[in-house]
Length: 226
Image (cartoon, rainbow, N blue to C red; front, top):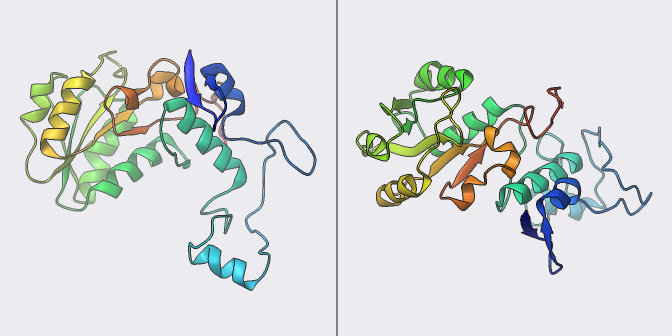
């Protein structure tokens, strides 16, 4: 399988990106493996450096609540594997889903979702989001026309899963993308079953935003990360 470009170098295959994307060997120790940075805080070179970081005039580590070097490599690696331009690591797949939707939607807005959803997603859509004033309309099936029929002036996104859980339904990305473009809204796709881009890269098929759980295929061992 072919993957992303590595700077100005050769195009790297997916298997290479899995191991090396987003990371350079540690310049101090020459460590090949990515260290785990268990720090909350970072040293500034001087007061101007600190001011530039907090003023967003310079790029760098400020506080681990905002970013962390270990997380940074993971984010770059997932973005490379998914064919994206950037990624954000959060505490869980449900958190990723919540942040993606609440960044786009305010109280009074809604999204249109596939009816074939992971149970945790269904509960978040059916219970949590409505408590915040964000509505979720469930299409009657996975036909693109069923999604479009529910779109109104307050609809802010379409939501699908690469492989629907538990029905194993596969969305018609091309048709859904055409509908989304027509209404000026993004397609959000849960790619957990896409195995971090190995089985499917939804961004290449029309999705605008990808969310996923890392404790399935990405981690491979079902253990927590934090």
